[in-house]
Image (cartoon, rainbow, N blue to C red; front, side, top):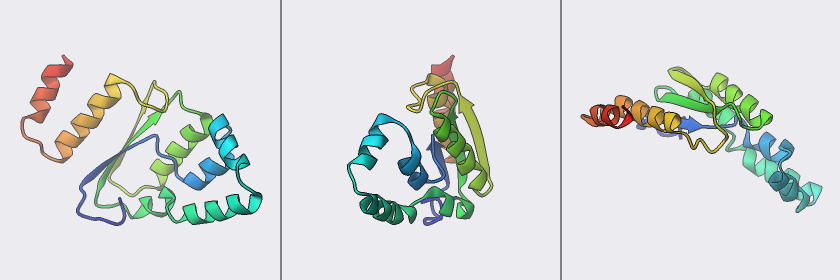
Length: 137
């Protein structure tokens, strides 16, 4: 969406990988191993080829003028941490990156408040920033 619909002013991208295809093909979690094992080599290759058209690295360089806020998790799997950094580097300006001491699910008040504050500021939600400030004190 960052490259396709220029009406959208801002995005919050949490734990984004630069290439879903690489993630599906190489991630060593039990889930993705089982997924790959459920297919023949040909089926997996075909699936990855179909997925390639949706990989973020093809769209992030064309994301301007939308403002992008990347949230990456320090306790995520190593491949995801690296991919989140690569996605950030691939994106057009304006962009911001913030790392959190969380796992991939971002169940963290700091990350949640940062998302809400980012959106409130970029979307000019009147009064929302004040309300957010009161609830975080």
